[in-house]
Length: 188
Image 1 (cartoon, rainbow, N blue to C red):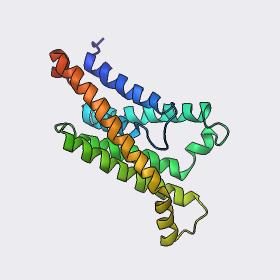
Image 2 (image 1 turned 135 degrees about the horizontal axis):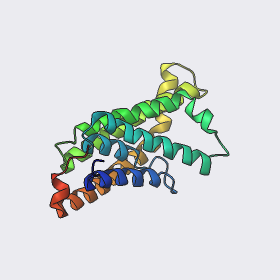
Image 3 (image 1 turned 180 degrees about the horizontal axis):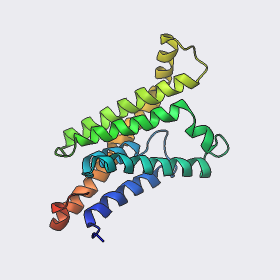
């Protein structure tokens, strides 16, 4: 059996911890969802695994959120059968791809750009999904009204992306720089 590398455990633990944060009380959209995806893309060398890990983390945390917190409002079946959910998961895939940009760039500017672009992707896709399901007219004006109503949530999402991305990437950077063996390892 292949030895499990400490850096692999560190990255998977960070992603799991970020997923757990979604279950704690928070401002609307102030979550580490983008950080989970960005870390997958930036830190996991296997392309397939870099997409799978954030999707699994999101899936498990979605089920737990519905079962433990939102059970009065929606069922797991209703949530996962909606078009809006498909677009949210598409945004996770897009944010993971954005994370590939961070494989060799971990500067403050690169993290800021990746967090901001991730917030924009999530805003555009999730609000498009909301428009598909809401009662506003299915016209350009209805879509623009949906985006307008989503602006306050965008601010929370952007703040959460920046906060969690800098915290989690900062902690991982500190941990790997503090331990040269971790720094030399590649996450498979």
